Each structure stands twice: as C-alpha cells, then as structure tokens.
Amino acid sequence: MRTASVILSIFSMIVGPARSIATESEWPIVANPINLNYQFQPADRDLPRREAADPACEYFNGYYWLFASKSGGYWRSENLVDWEYIPCPSIETINDYAPTILVYDDALYFTASSDGNPTRIFRTTTPEDGTSWKEIECKISYIHQHDPSFFKDDDGRVFFYWGCSDVNPIIGVEVDPADGFKALGEPVELIGHNRDKYGWEQFGRNNEEDSNGWNEGPAVIKANGKYYLQYASNGTQFRTYCDGVYVGDSPLGPFEYMEGSPFSIKPGGFIGAAGHGHTFRDKYGNFWHVASMLVGVRHWYERRLGLFPVVIKNGNMWSSTVLSDYPFRIPQEYVDVDSVPFDERTLSVGWRQLALDKAVSASSEGTLEKGADGDSGVGHARYAIDERVETWWATATGNAGEWLCVDLDSVCDIHAVQVNFSDEGAKALMGEALPHKYIVEVSSDNADWRMLVDRSNNTDDRPHELILTGQPVAARYVRITNTADLPCKFSIMDLRVFGTDTRGKLDEVTEFEVIRNEADPRRISFKWNPVKNADGYILRWGLHPDALTHAIMVRGTEYEAGYFNRDSKYHFTIEAF
Image (cartoon, rainbow, N blue to C red):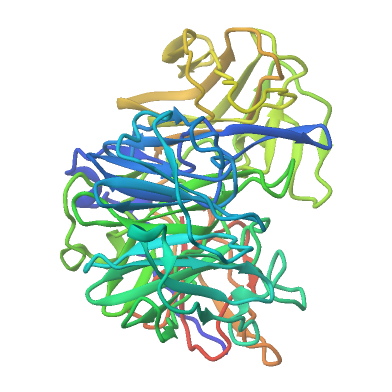
C-alpha cells in the first residue's frame, strides 16, 4: 500500500498561531514523566535505579490517590499537578508489584500481586495517614494473582481481575467486599493471546520476536453504559509497551476487541512506553490514563509514570500521548470533547524544545560509555540535549560548581525548563531522598548572566521538574550549575528548554510513502523527504481519515513498526515539527 497523503495541521501549535485551548486557559501546565520522588531500588549489577510502574489512581475524599509498584508508599494530589508523598509502613505488601485500589463504602482498599502467596487486602478511611491501614480478612483463594485490579459498578457490585502471562488469559470474577471479597461464581477467562492478528501483542523491542507478548495489567472503566477492559502488552522493557482494550456490555463480558487498539501507545519522544496503566475520571468528569513509561538502562524495570488525556466516545477509546512529554495543560473543569477540535485534545501548550541538538559545553565529562543496545549512553555532554531519556551527561564528580551550558543558536523566548536528573553513581536506598541543589541562569551574550531558577536551598527530591518562567524570558544561552556537593555524580538525562523562536512555519513533508509488508500486514514502513529546520516528524494514523487517534514522534526520515492490526485498514499523515 502506498499513499502520498500529507497534512500540516496539528503542529500549527508549534510553528504557527497557538490554539485557544492553550492560550486562553489558566489551567496548570505539566510534562511527563510525572515529577515524583521515585524510590531507589536495591542495586542490580551495581547499578542502583529509581522505579515506579503499574500505577492505579482514584479520586477519594477530595484527593487523587496514586499508587505504583515498589514505591514504599503512595502520593496524593488535589489537582493532578502537585503530588505529596505518603510513606506507608502499615501495608506490609506496599512494595509488591502492580498495586490496585478500590473506593468502596467510604473507605479505600489496597491489594497487589500475590506472586504465589495468599492475597492480602488492606483498608483505611484515612489514607492521608500512611500508618492507618489495617489488614482485613481475605477470602480470595486463587493463587498466582499477578496484576490484580478492582472495579466497582454503578450498582455497587465489585469485580476482581488479574493476569500477567505470555500463555494464560486475563481472568475476572465477581466478589463480595462484605464477605472478605469472596468470589461469587466461577472465574471467567476474558482475553486470550492473539499476536497473529494484533502485532502489538508480539514480543520484542519492535514486536519482531516470534513469541507472545506478556498480556497483563487488566483494568476496567465504565462509560456510557459500556465496559472497557484494558490490558497491556508486549513487555515492560520495551518502548512499544502499550495498552489495548476490549469493550463489552457487562463487567465479565463477553468482550469484543476494539479495532483501534492499542489505545495508549508511545514509542517515540523523550521518554517512551505507555503501558500497564489505569484509566480514571477526574473530579470534573474528564478521563485520564496513568501508565508505565520506560528508562530501562540500568535495569528492565527502571521506569517512570506518565499521565495522558483520554477520550471515550461511541464505543471507542484513545489516549493522547504523542505530545505528553512536552508541556500540556491539566483542565480544572469539565471539557466537552465534542466542543474541542479533534486536534486540540492533546492539551498541548505549543512550545518548541529549544535545546534539542544544540551546541553544548560542560565543566567536565565522565568516562564516555555506550549502552550495549547502541541507544543508551553515559558521559558526553551532548547526551543532555539529545531528547532521549536513555542517555545522560555525567560529570567527573558531584562537586559544587559543575555546570552544563546550552547555546540555543539565537535569542529565544523561554517559557519553561525541565531538568531531568540521572543520579549517576547514586547509592541511595528506598526511603532516602536525593535532593539536587542547583541554579539555572540565562544570557544573551554568554557574558552577562541572569538568574532564571534558584534551587540552591532545595530540600525536595525532584528528578523530573518542569519549571515555568511565568513570563517569557529572552535569552540565547542556558546554564545549569550544581551548587552543593552530591553523593553521586552531577548527571542530567536532558536539560530541556521550552519556548518559541524565530524559525517560522515549516514546509510540508513531500514524497510520503507507506509500504505495508505483504507477508506480514502487521508491519508497516514509512519514508519521506526531509524538511529544513524540522526537529522531527509526527506520524499519525487511525481507522478513519477524520479521526487520526494515534501518533508517534520520529527523528529522521524513515520508520518501521510492527504493532499494527493484521486486518485493519489505516489512514496515515506525516507532519514536520
């Protein structure tokens, strides 16, 4: 299949006039990954890592409660922007994988993967106190309940789901919370493996290995009378890790595959993956999906969390992920998706990443190391501006005075910076914070410097902080300086600078070619001509030309993927940004 369909509309928000949803709102601005105090895990191969994954989030008693694997506690927020960490010593299984929570009868319930042990459930009415949880009697008798989840229907009935396997199906059963969550009836097999039809269920970095992916992380949400049973595949260690969905008329099905699956996928950009997630409503009625994102250099399970806006409409469901690691807004009111132009549902603010691949200098560089997969690296200053979370600049020391400076090529209007620390050489343990003390300065001539950010007295652990300037700041050079000795090297995954410059509107992409693999229709390749001054390209696709529900950022002018559905017909467009 070949097509020359080309449009240049979505990224008018970056190269042309900003959209009303981005400029007229006072909604707060964030960027993925979520800026949490991700906990350090025990060292593997002498490479300590931060980790949080497999999240669940619910609104309860005026707060959003966010739980994730291996976190030693959980977080709460009033606005999905500012998160407070609550250590939780009273849940003995708090560090087990794949936690799930249930709001029921004015209380919050917690369980996690049993991993062959008896399922344990904890309850509290005051989750703001991490010591208040009490274990309750649990009559769930099934073993190996990996990746459990609860769902409460509108009539108060509660259902329990689980599944994490490259062989076994996703399973569900109704349970009775008033009787220790005892099963009401026999478990039902809900979702099997279908990699021959759905390429995203095939294992491998690019879905290329001849084996099943791990279907896992089930979660259910109800909307407009339909039940959406979500699940992840193919492996949490891949950027292609994503979530698909089946739709049914009852909590235990039967379910029908949603052809637009996967609905949450993010292989490209600064940080990739959007799998094993949980969809929830905010207090205004908007849908969100919180999911696992991947670093994956020190360990497969080196992961972060991402938050993505979701649309559920007419039996379909999709998540806007492509611009989620650029600044976007969190609505503080209900947004009627029918009143918002389709292309604006990303909620993007519309700023460029000004530091991408610009000239960079540093006080020092650690020993240059290249990852075994060829896509990760440590040491060189250029890794701090390459827009890849898998690479980072590391200094020779962690001493105060180490610095990194980016030349933006010309004076630009800076609206925000995002500092992503890598903690190279850290020996911290779970529960130990690693606050960075630093300053960010700007200059128009590399001589006269002005303070932009002062974190020299910082005591918070903020590894992925997005810092807004309030008003645009005109500058060409951006410099970050460590102001206090660290117990590790001063290291930055990326110093990202967001704003506007004078490069103007880009030309349209030409000679866009789409080639579907005749022997394996799940695999499709793309080629196009380069566009001058483009930072990259947005490849969009969907089942209808007026609903391009999926997208990926691509660097370069070629791309090939195997996560498509064998029998689906797609429409594609390509845009320069």
